Amino acid sequence: MITARRLVPGLMTGLLGLALLAPGQARAGRGPGPALVALPPGAVAAPAVVAGANLGGTVRPQDAPPEAVADAGVEPAAPAGSEAADAPDRETAPPPVQIMDHFSIVNPEQVYTYELLTSDLQRMAAQYPDLARVRTLGQTAYGREIWALGLGTGPGTVLLVGAHHGSEWLTANLMAAMADRYALAATVGETLGGFNVNELLRSATLWFVPMLNPDGVTLSQVGLSAFPAESHARFLAWNGGRDDFRGWKANGEGIDLNRQYPAEWAYIAASPAGPSFSHYKGAEPLVASESRALFDFTLALDPEMVVAYHSAGQVIFWHFHTWPENVERDHRIAERLSGLTGYDLLPPEENPSGGGYKDWFVQTVGRPGFTLEIGRYTDGGPLPLSAFAEEWQRNRAVGLALAEEAVRLDQERGAR
Image (cartoon, rainbow, N blue to C red; front, side, top):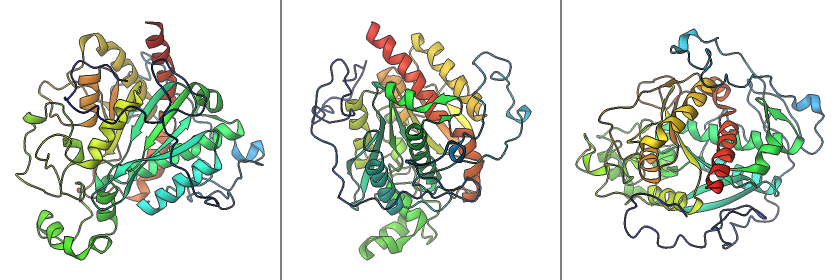
């Protein structure tokens, strides 16, 4: 379990016994628990690949010829400290090039709904039974499951989270695409972005929570018709009377999930007095079921690092009252992420606004945590689907690079 300098009292209840490791995976201090969520028989159709127009063709992982799943040839990031990695201005980097990628299940170039995610994660777990497993972290106020998918069998663990905010649902496309692409590459023995995926996922495990806020995502994508009639007046009031919910960021109870974590929560500025489509921090930390579920899962999982994907801005946040002894380590990993994605690495703020998931993990647990903001700024609504191809190219190897880092950190922790 996580050892931290400061944990909110009473939040460890029910964490013991969670089954988070793959079959056969072991780690000092972690015992067995109940089985993960079972999938219904016959949940998987024939494993035909789906892909967007910009992203590739069709392949079945069990019989794909090497040339059908050849890597797109994207070079690995420049090492931290090199001239390329240290370039201060993103505009000086080479412009993005088009790539071709293959996905066995996920079609990421569509409005990616909660229903699609639910089906795709179950199919991944069934199609890759030796590599992937799915579980629910709990339910939202409107009964939607908060899904998590584990990929890999090694002890070095990374937790990646998407869609804290409803209107930022393109991050769920990215998370699901990563999981699918990595599973396919590992199965067919493919190298991706310079990484031997099969070998890496025997040493590390990536946990994905692609859509932490399925109620907010559904309201942003579909609108009021996806919710009970008795909730409509409440949602309209929280949305300032507007019936356009595309910019909705909160969960189904009008709480901003990324202002819910116990990291300087009392000092969060500019919070509305009550539920709202955006920025309301809640009556107290962790009252939102989604944030509490992720908090508890993180403590039980005990990951080497966490990543929260948001939009927009193409920037990376990496520091929040970071322990002095951790600054050099965290900055090195952040520079590597900047080199991979081309995103600007933001300097530490003197008085940062708290309450964020990454903020809590960095400040309290004392391990690396990062917020990556994908896409270019919009008018406050969701990123357009047309943004996916570029953001996929920038981020396709991020999970693998972090898995490599997690293996190193796990080994260092085991040696102490």
